Length: 141
Image 1 (tube, one colour):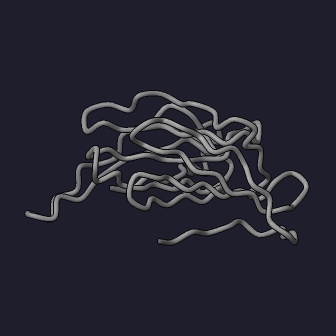
Image 2 (cartoon, helix red, strand yellow; image 1 turned 120 degrees about the horizontal axis):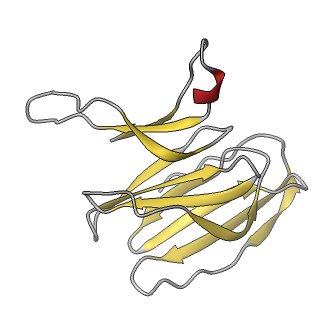
Image 3 (cartoon, helix red, strand yellow; image 1 turned 90 degrees about the vertical axis):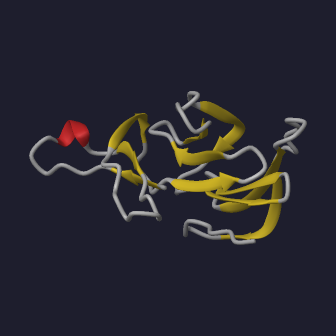
C-alpha cells in the first residue's frame, strides 16, 4: 500500500491532496490511485496493523494538527486529530505489538512521543525528550 501527497503543476488546488494505491504482490498489478479526503503540507506515513488487518496513516494537517485515518480493508474511516499533536513537520509513526507510536517535532522544536493501544484505545499523551531539532522525525521498530 502506498499513500502519497499529490502534486499538479497546472492545478495548484490539487497539491497536498492525499492519494492511496496498492500493488497486488501475486500478479504485480497496481490498483491505480484513489483520492483520500484531506490534505497535508508534509509527507504522509502509513503502517499496517496486522492484528486488525487495517492500515493507518498519519499526517500533519494544513493547520499543523496531527491527524490519523484508518482503512479497514474497504473504506477509510475518517480523520481524527491526535490530542495536542501540533507540529511544523511530518510526523512519524510505527507499530509494535498492539501499540502505535507517534513522534512529532513540536512547535517549540522539541521532540515528543506518544502511544495508542489498538486493543483498548488508551492514548498515553505526549512525552517530551531533551533537546530540539528542526528536522522531521523518523521511527522504526
